[in-house]
Image 1: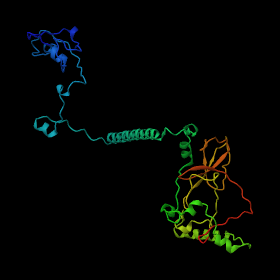
Image 2: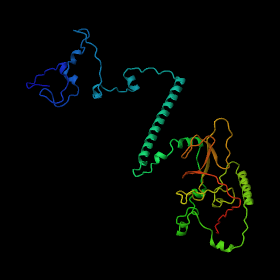
Image 3: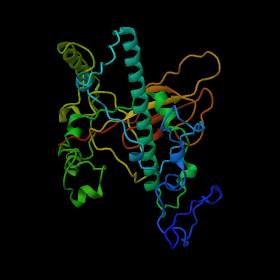
Image 4: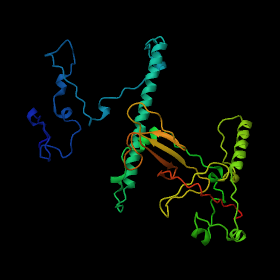
Length: 344
């Protein structure tokens, strides 16, 4: 920059590159704008347009992101009242165009919805990535990811419809009859397998006991429910409201048996499940399959391991805890069911 005598030496265009290390002719501190300090930009200023030695060539304005915005200045919005006081008349307002305003409003709404949807997708993607990172257990050596069916949950849920399951009111309120807070050793030993009372068995002895059918009771209960529907205006009515409503004597009873001795998940009384029949259609026209129980869901893939052949169906028991395949077994006509009451 300066010599020892203090005289200024202008640099040529070939020596404009600033050296990386300080020299006797250059400062240790970098300059703010090299061209502003060391080029003859004053020669291009037009002081008098009528008295000019030469016409300067037009310069290309180059803006550097590292420059301070204060060098160029920032425009300031001026209020309309200030413009009128200064003698500046504002532009006359354009006539209101309802059609143009309608299209502009609709475009803004669409752009707002698109931006909101993009933000939701980014948040969902971030949550899924975080969930995947947290679900990866370094000590999990079961390789479940290699055996889990891919792209099945989305297909099944989109085809089968809503999976809303409504439990009974005693189950929702966690009634102490079905959800005890303390279990003694006897109930823990016979968990979900309470035996018949020995006192009742002793009173029976070795004599024959007549088997009472529930056909009459079921018919009376159906008539009572029809009257209750008519009294409340018809439509679907939720009947599982009281503890007395949770009984296996007043309707058709389905028995579900686990294939394992100690199942990991068990439903308490009053908790609901749903039977869903997955069916893969054949090519061409065919009649819809008829199942005695459950709702039919047409799908191309199986929700479990394996695949469905055209014309093949698979039944499953589903709730908020699990989804398990079920298979119907025919029972003997000589079998009968003993229902345990509160007295034994």
